[in-house]
Image (tube, rainbow, N blue to C red):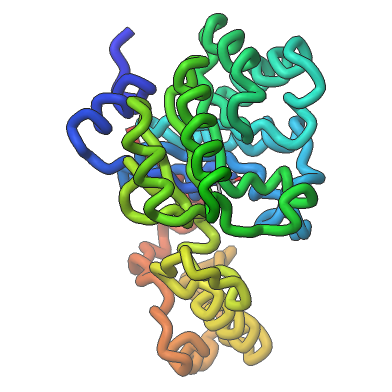
Length: 317
Ligand code: KIV
């Protein structure tokens, strides 16, 4: 079957051609559809969902069932991007058989096209077994959040010669075992560049400088959904926290002041005899300078009873 999906082969070719790979996290179908339309190459259903969706302090409490649930939703929103399901803490560390069953669930039940797991050489056997049964594996080395307690926090890795060498050795072991790409998180740019040059598979950096083959960010971070979280490696492309608050404040004010819903947003039994209300004053949105309400098509009142309550959502082909 011919596919327009980004595959592990597409990504390998991109590295060979020197084309940068884009990856963002996604946790639901609506975001997935938008990111897919923008041709993001890989959508990662990261265990970061524990922090940005569930409000946990770390990624450690996330369960496999939760990642499967979000992966299913993300898959429904995509046509082109590769969807990678993150193996959560303790879903692959207790033994190869259990790890394979869990990775299999991410593919079978979640619909993921690949799985990601944290760690280097210690997982070589598992990765070899997974790729042998047809499950592509993305590695993840450097700052590995599932080792939060062992690392003593979210700290930059690879600062001394010994850990730098270990990172290069881990990357080579992952490639040798069959991993198709590696996330490099939280390490100096020079170290990430050395790792990237040492392997033939693409590296995807986060807080690892510009010399990786691609870049990944947590979608909520790059959209500025949390004003109090702005680590150095994140570039905010939006300030959605402010914009969302502005929009919601306007909704609250509109409802409290009787400005929402307006006539065009209401249904009437007898449209031609509907009560004449003074035209709603300017929406609170206009006061705050945000984008105003969507223009509503002027409705043909005589036809109002046959209007569907919801119009069919647009689904990209
Ligand atoms: O869980 C996650 O979102 C990740 C990325 C930060 C790489 O592992």
